[in-house]
Structures are given as C-alpha cells and as structure tokens.
Image (cartoon, rainbow, N blue to C red; front, side):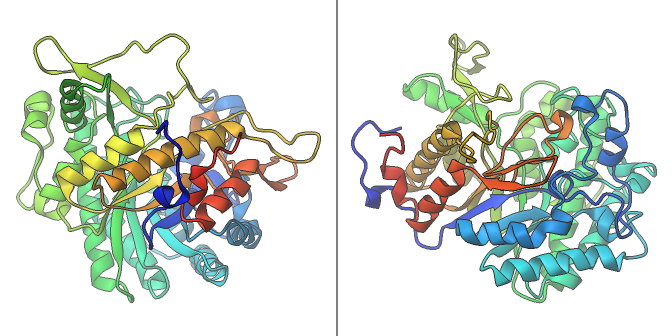
Length: 467
C-alpha cells in the first residue's frame, strides 16, 4: 500500500467501472428438493460421510431461493452496480439434458426481474461446480458429448433470460472442478483421476466453454458480453528487483510440474486457440487427445477475462536464472481463516500481466476473505479484517489500472455468508452475516464501508477507516 497520503481523486476508479458482489447457486440457494430440481455432484458428495465439515450440506444454505427479494433489497441498499450469480444446471434441466423444468427456470426469470427493479445489473455464470449427477454417471466432462450437453443447456438459459441479461460467464474455476482433488483438496465428485484423464476432461470443458460462447452470441436477444471466470495463479516478486519481477511474470505465464495449477494451459487455449509449448513439453504423454477443430472450438472471442484472485505465490529469480517458487514465507505471515496468505499485490500484478498477455479487458470476478465474524452484543457484526483486506487489495487494483491494465470491474466474494464447499458453514466470506439457525441477515461493518467505496467510485479508499 502506498505510504504517502492519498487523495480521494487518486483513489477513484474510472467512470463506468463496475462495482459488484458475487455468489453461486449451490452455496446460497438451498431448496435442494424443491420445484423439480435434480441432483448434482455436490448433493451426492455431501451425502458421503466425512466429505464435508460436520456433515453440512447445501440443502438449505441461505435459503436464497425463497428470500431472493430480501437479498436484492440488501444489494440495493449496498448500492451495487452488478450482482454475479450462478444458475443451477439441475434446477433448469433436472437430468442435465432433455425436459426443461419450467419452475426452476422461472426462479431465475423472477430473480433477474427483481435485480433490475433494484437497480442491480445481473451477471450470470452458467456453471459453478454443481454438475448434474445424471450426466456425471454418463461420463461427465470425460465424455466428448459433454460439449453438446453444456451448449444445449446454455441455449435454454439464453433463450429465456437474454432479453434482460447481457453479461455472461461460462465456467467458474475449471482449475478446481477439473484440477481439484490431488491439487486442491477434497471436492465433488470426489474422484482422484490421473493427470492424463484430468487433462482430457479439461479439454472437453474448454471446448464446452467455446461452444457456450457461440450459443450466447448466436441466440442472445440483446447484445451480449461474454467471458469466463478461471482462477488467477499469480506470481508475486519476492523483492522489488527487476530480476524477481521478470521471474514472477514468467512464473505467472508458465506451466510447472504434472498438475493443473497454472494460467497458460487454460487461457492460451481459449484466447490464442493453442496449448502453450511449455505445457506440451511438461505434460508430454499426458497431454489430451486433440481432434481436428477442437482448438478452434475453444477459441471463441471473449469480451472480458474474468478472473478470481485471492492471493499470490512468492517467486524469485533462481540461481540458474529461471523462476523459483519460494515455498517458505516469513514466520507469522498474514493469513485468512482459510490459511490463505494475504497478498494485496496479487491484485496489482495479476490484472497487469493478464492484460499484457491476452489484451482482453479484465474483470475481477471474485476477491475476498474468510474471517471470524459473529453478531456482537450490540447486534452488529464487526469485521475490521475484511475492511482492511479489501481496502489494501483495491488500492493495488487501482494502481494496476494507473499502470495500464484495462480492468472493467470488481466483484467482492461474497455477498452473503454461505456454504463453503468442503468447509461447510465453518467459514464466512460474506458482506452480510447469515445466522443459519434463523436465516436472519445482518449487514456487517464491511457492508457499510463497501457502500461508501461504491458511492465514491473508490474515493473512500483514501481514508484510513481505523484512524
């Protein structure tokens, strides 16, 4: 963070910058058995003993399915420009394909209308991990037909909502729903596939992304803006030296080891229409089978590069001149309740380097932290760590824009406390506290602070909220 005094004007973001918050369907909607919704791999995973903390499930979650009007009113109060939400594939198509569940699709119809009435622009994500169980049992992403399945699902949603929804994201974090398990920890569906199989699954998922973009462009009733929301794997220079900066940038764009934790294997395929040469060398015989036309299918032009950035990885120039990951941080380094390191510079270097490489406008589609939040004796939720964390990250994002990065928006994760996957209700990411016994919503101090940031286009960042 800059040490010199800040002015409101120096902290303001460009006019038209989108200030938002984000959620996902399985994490907040609940109503898992209501109105014809089908089973997803996360429903099945939660039923497996020992898979999720304390046996928690998304069966009720925040009950957003029945409380969306209340939640939209909170978004209006917050002053959000936009709300990023995901659509439950199995709520729309209970078996993943075939008959449309009009009751489920109708929920999103009403949600979009409610958001627009609240002055909040809807940004829809088509897939945020809740894959239909019926399709998983037919091979899931490992089946080449998954490309068609996802395209058909996209068509159903676009036909219904695109007269009012203009902003679309296809896949959220394929790094985790494909690369998860041995790389990222326990995730649904709980399989532990060899690298070669995971790369083939990812190949089909990236093709599905491309086909989905084509469907959006071909059938949208209003001019669409199409993107995606992968993880941001961001190298942070260990020191301020030019050598470490070059090493961190090279690491950010590199492919390392037989895992899927990188940017280039995904983004080069989507934005350039080819897998990176370094990745082909690293994965070698594990690389996916590529049929004629596959890469062209992935390579559907995007309007924005959505990216989820929470932290970074320290990198320095090694003795041989190559980038070297620094595994050992200093004792007592800053970290969140999930033990993720607090690295505000990831929101500087990440957007800057992704824009420089791909020349596609960047949108921060997730950024936030878990913290120890509860309702205090005064009836309020005091979360100073979230305020400080977000302020530091946003100041770095503003610096990236000043240094030339084309960044169009920021979505805080999350609007509500929610079901945090394998961590269940153990972690709280929200700007709004949810009491899971009563489902009462309580805006946190960070909610009221973020409201000021939005109202001033970032100008409020100039003021130390703890002074």
